[in-house]
Length: 308
Image (cartoon, rainbow, N blue to C red; front, top):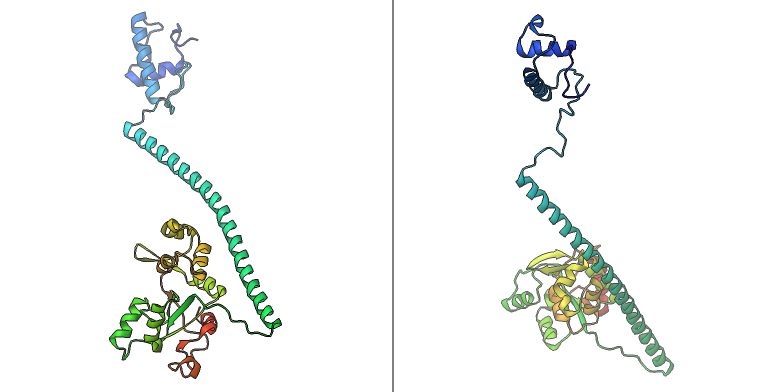
């Protein structure tokens, strides 16, 4: 039976529908309606069945529930979806670009690290060669003067005159167990003499410099103390000086390079712990008198191991 055709004899379901829909008695319904009335009744039946969908019928009226294609979406929601998709695509592009840049930088960093290792090893071999040559000639080998000093404060502010207090402020040694790297100059040497009763200092080796920076290293970013957990922190603040990673920073500090001042100022003063086993019983005596104060040259490396 087609959708718009009408049977000469109604089915029981259609009769039941019109009885319930229009409240007409079943016996009053004719066997066949006039064509005009028939079309009106059929249209009403179509609308009712599509709206309520509760009756079983032999007519094929399609789906009573609208699909996603027929649902109208508000324009604001469409705009929001579009903006979110655009932002998502932009973020994905930025992430991909950053990954590519990091991959390229990683190769540069590895090459620099290998270069630094070769440089350190060649310098160490040169020292050994010169020492052996001096021994073979029955002469003494005098190593070059150190260019780097590590200073750590081990005494408080009690009974401290104004001048040493000001010098400690200039050296950024504001608390006990604070440590900083300094370049050996005449001015620095004179300042260390003034504050010698409050500090211990000496000449650190490569191992000490690496351990301090990698374990206790913090940078000064916008006047804030930020841990050096990523090479990007170093690059953002020292990239203009050619220092793009922590290994570059270690090399610049240890070799006292041309940008040592910027690198040392970028490093926040190290906050060290009390040494394992404590200080010597005569802590406030000079190092050569059995204490801990003053210049201890290469022996500072042992103190760094204890306090790091």
